[in-house]
Length: 92
Image 1 (cartoon, rainbow, N blue to C red):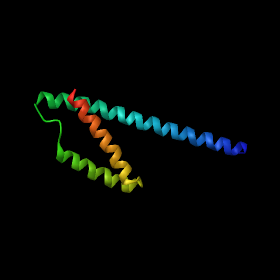
Image 2 (cartoon, one colour; image 1 turned 135 degrees about the vertical axis):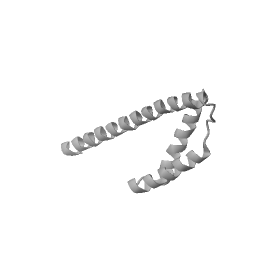
Image 3 (cartoon, one colour; image 1 turned 90 degrees about the horizontal axis):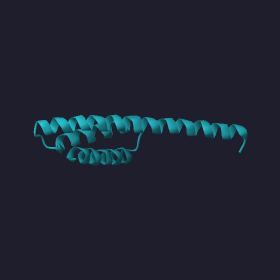
Image 4 (cartoon, helix red, strand yellow; image 1 turned 180 degrees about the vertical axis):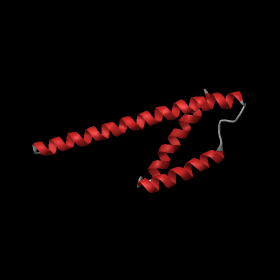
């Protein structure tokens, strides 16, 4: 590998690290919002699960994945993990 190849590799890895940080930050923000949602649902004696909302989210994620050229299966898998964790957080 040439010096320029190594420099490019390091630059691309740095970019990926910044993107990973952004993803984690976004998850943190989402989970903070979930905490507020949990408090509201508890105060109003609402159910945790909302199948209609989940269908809306899945449709939105499918559409956005297509627009952003992200594999649909990956986007939906990520959403499923997020929804499972969101429900777990609301149950505690």
